[in-house]
Amino acid sequence: MGVPTKHMDYITALKCAWNLTPCFISGYFDDGMAGGPLAAIQTVDRAVAYIMHTVGVKGSMLKFERASVNGTKCTRLRLPRQLSEPEPDGPDTPEFTAPEPGHIDVLGKILNTQAGLRYDKPQRLGQFKALLQAIVHQAQSTPKRMVSEMALLRALGQACYVTDTCTPLRAFCHAMIEALKIADSWSSKTAGQSLASHSTKRKAANSMGKAAHDIYMSNKAVSIFKEYESQGDPFNDQQDKLLKDWSKIDLGRRIYLPIEADAELQRLAEGLDLWNKERLMPLRSPPGKDAIWIMNDSAGLSGELDMTQRRAGACWYYSPAWATIKWDQELWRNEVLQQSHSSSQELSNGNANLKYAIFMATQDPDTWRTSCYIEVYDSLATVSVLTKMGANTPEMRELVAERLEMSHSVDARILSLWQCREKGQPADDFSKFLNAKAKQDLLDRYNIPVERRPEFRTRAGITNSLNAEFEAASSMLLLDRVETSEAGE
Image (cartoon, rainbow, N blue to C red):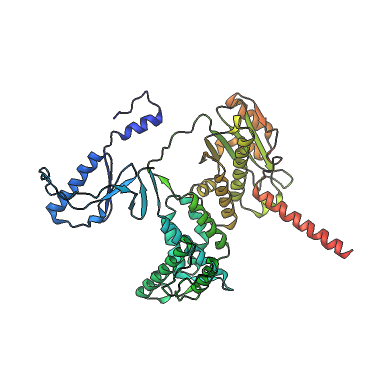
């Protein structure tokens, strides 16, 4: 089947390396999974059957499924008659059912061997999204935004499972987690409830989510707890009736849900439509020669500098394919520096610089189009936030959401790395307006010209969001003052 050689490129060698592994086996507490060529799988399969015969292990035939790369699956009908002797001649019950189109379910996830993908079943996603919708409706229907604690616990548990194919989406669970933390909801005996009572409420929350799923998956009214039936009313009317009734269901204690959860849960549901599938064997190839490096740094408040000295969010861009190094900087407003944290300043600057590179790929694709952006920070906290795509403060969560939106518009990898501050001196100098020193440093390193972008980032309409928010607030305040003055006149 071919083995890797030193003359092969990386991708071809990686594919050939898998030829040396005829079968892989993964075991769980009471289940297992094997993958490989048919002959190898049949060997493993008969070995499992031999253990069952010899040791006396029992198992459900329906759990013995086999999926093929042609998009078909089959289910075992019986164990082999003889494990060490040939099968008897004549008609006999086959070991497996005839192959039929479909993909197998492994621990709640669909394993699509034909496309090499792993993802959740539509029914599971539908039920989860509808449960989120019911929780938001419940919060918006009460003056104090009180929602079912058990339903929220269930939603968080499901969120952790359905997002394991794209963990950055868990950033949109922050408001749910905060609500449960404040209410001290982590114990299985919350608020003095017995474990049995807790289990009963969880089942009620499960039924609530299942009924919600039925509405989500069809354009007709369905029953909730078998009490409601469609009477031919329009779907939206029936949905509204059922959502109102959910608010009246006794699911035990209710807790406060922050208002930011409404937008977060909507974004979570939307994100699952885009990022619920993952590759079984993703290729992690090195960045190509077209990679663009974005070396970021932001100068914040410092006791060494007085307020008359300027500070900026800055970066320099480099690609092995370019004839020049490009740099840019955006002056920070002193009010922003005083009112925001250095980590948020670093991330806001990084978002704006990345957004500019993505923008230029549409304006000058011959120069700026790339398969990989490599952004470098000297802030370990910023890289940590970008790695897990989650944050604690509202300010940082908004910047994480900005980054997620940005990823919609780019067909390239984005790698976020950290380096120690001493090695990022040129970016640090640009951020303090020591431009001549930074340019000379880069010229000494790379021996190629260093240019400022002729169309500055801010001139292209791309400013960092912290500056933009303050400018918008200042404009509104000025407008209010003008209107008040005119009214007085």
